[in-house]
Image 1: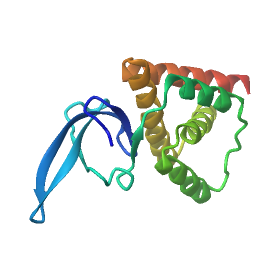
Image 2: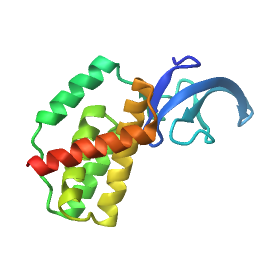
Image 3: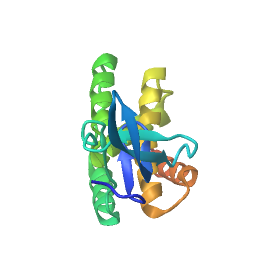
Length: 165
């Protein structure tokens, strides 16, 4: 169960604050819902039925220590570009949809490296944006920093790694 003020990650919208718990009537039944506010779009509201949070794909954010450990593992992880575009799309989309911080960070790293070498296809560019939103919003909410600043820093760091390769 989440509480008002908790920091969570939504599978599609990235990091959010639990802003409220509210009752809503659906199909003649009153249900309780979490009201989430994504940090990337403060005007948006996401409603998740309490008790259905696992199905709706939200989780608590990582702790700063867990995040640091994941960043260290990702930095030392060698990645291989999947040359078959269809297989790459399926693999990366599946990884991103699971929204595991470490796995998505590795995908983000590979897409950023490839983007620095050659412009990505529109499908790969969309995957890059989705991965970046999940990773950068979670880093921003945990570190209490601005999303745009975090995104610029992450891109700079990952792009620098591609130069070293």
